[in-house]
Image (tube, rainbow, N blue to C red; front, top):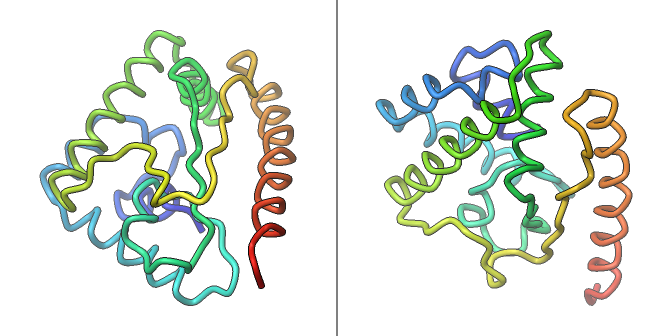
Length: 172
């Protein structure tokens, strides 16, 4: 389960690409209960798991310490714009890289403002919150579905190696 899935459900979004649309962030800004309910669902889900990987930017600040391995996924703006463009392609729509870049910038700004407003959190990499930092920039070379799928597979191998190394170094 990922936060994107929870958010799409709460917003009534059926297509993955739609989560990038500014109108959905406007709805979240107007009704902060959407974010609070999503965060509560993720916290409850994590609490019920022995091992879990969570796709949620804010969750490391909200969950009790030690309940999960918290990984900060670093990604440069161009890489995120390509991921955004590909999410539209997966739903049969095309968005230019420039338009995708604008959507990413707007979503990032909204998220930072929303996290500060709801929880007083200055969202950025914090070594005291995250156990591991992984950079997934550059794994998608072109904004195509095939290249995205290849990049995801390649990054997954790197991520698993790094997480397994981190866990191997921890005392039992």
